[in-house]
Length: 34
Image (cartoon, rainbow, N blue to C red; front, side, top):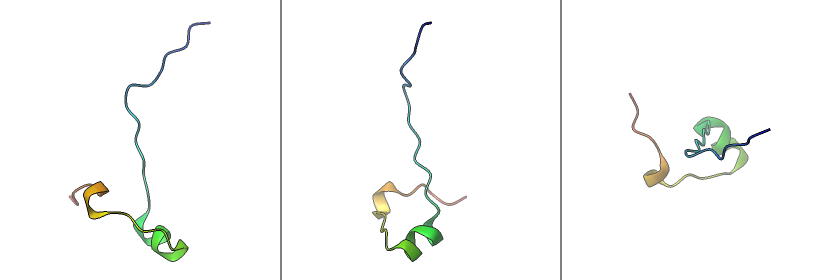
């Protein structure tokens, strides 16, 4: 069975939940808001 490595990874973080958990995201990592 052939296996392929992904070429792109996406990290999705809910900022409200992260803030409640005490996790902070750098501004440079955030995607622009639409």
